[in-house]
Image (cartoon, rainbow, N blue to C red; front, side, top):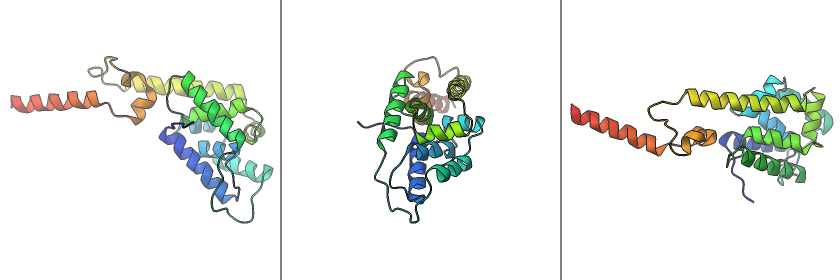
Length: 194
């Protein structure tokens, strides 16, 4: 199955891949994904992890402690571990449940938590993260982002038409062609009046 990721989630996965290569690991594990989520500063997961005092530096320390580094950097990874694949599947299901076609960083973080028995969860527990608190924090940040998106909308162009105005991810990464057309029409009419 092909998954669609938000830009933030895609960046987090690329950061995870780079870390795995740097550490000489020939796979991308949940621990690498957790690091990518914390390091990718534009995503919801990064905000939530930071609020729980989980930093990229602490995650790296734990990865070194639990798994270690290989002497030589690998040239490439063989891809995701089976557990990481399950995390992505969990994230996909979570995104669908929340009405998104794209997997965001918040969905990946929930996917990690749902997988349970993973290095990433062990790292979070070692860093005194309460899984229920973390989940509640994710929901809180998502709701705050939704409210902020609602408040930033122009009331003249946001009458609730279409799905663009109702989909946070689409708002963030898409272009409202109807709005652009209306703005061009308004500018054109203003020029004609001169």
